[in-house]
Length: 155
Image (cartoon, rainbow, N blue to C red):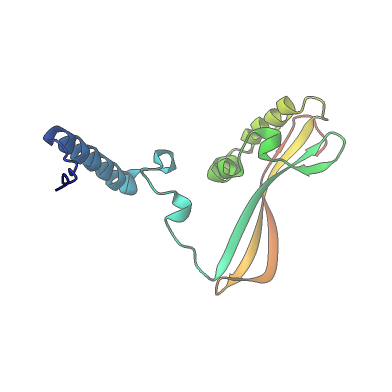
């Protein structure tokens, strides 16, 4: 008669470690669900996924645009500045309250693109889409939410 396969057994110390780790993770997830922020991910939910929007109303899409000293208008992206769109959206209220902070985005662009013309204006623009029952109605408006213009530049 062949030997019966031996089932793996977990020693008491191993079991205690596994239970302790599981309890710590569970406590972190529970606590950060109520008091956490996006920085605590994966132990806290991302705010953007933790609530729902109304099906009727306005949905916005934020972008950052610049005007250089040659008068050219263009979009400022993560590749050109190092600032992610989500970072700008997350700090949008600060930029609206103090538009001079937009100078940092201009400086980041100029540091990344030293061969390009200097930026004289940076704007945060939100394109808002009207929704009814969760679908776009076709009504779109654009709102300039914050503007910074380099001192001494023609605006």
